Length: 221
Image 1 (spheres, rainbow, N blue to C red):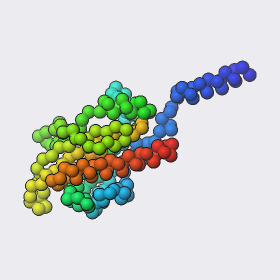
Image 2 (spheres, helix red, strand yellow; image 1 turned 45 degrees about the vertical axis):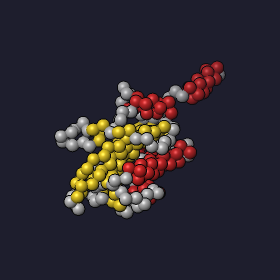
Image 3 (cartoon, one colour; image 1 turned 90 degrees about the vertical axis):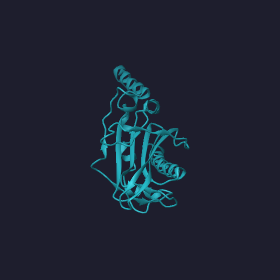
Image 4 (cartoon, rainbow, N blue to C red; image 1 turned 180 degrees about the horizontal axis):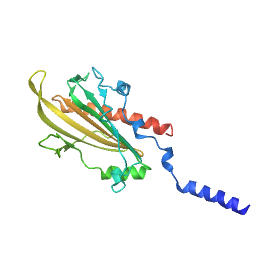
């Protein structure tokens, strides 16, 4: 009888201390990604056409505990593809052709782990090419906060609109934000001249991601 009581007490202590596989109660990063077209229907700045979720280039990543930002439980990277420029209503912007919308979600074991991961994340790089395989460092952006903490960057350059044979300003922008034990990264590429509109659209997509994560947290995963 004493052995049974001791075993029950041991199980109770382990449960309180958080030992064992706590990740069973965590959501899967794939489920938190903006991974379906209908996820975008709640945007305030709605799109004239639907970008296409691209399964071939979307992928899961394994954790790598050596670095805090990679010490997650699950991670999923989703990209959307556009064949032609897509008008963004209420703005003068267009979603650029190519892989113009990305969402990278990491789920950590605890909020503390996520805070450490967020602090460890490096600034994104932009404008990759065959001549510039390492990309170019962007400029950090002063932008409204999303989640408990967030950061954003942008890179602007002139590119050729091949359909109309004119040069346009292209903004590549990215925001990281943390909501509880989840970090979401939103990447967008748009054409347009108004940086204020670019900020507003980036915030709109980031808040859409935050809402999806918040609903999962409110449900208790």
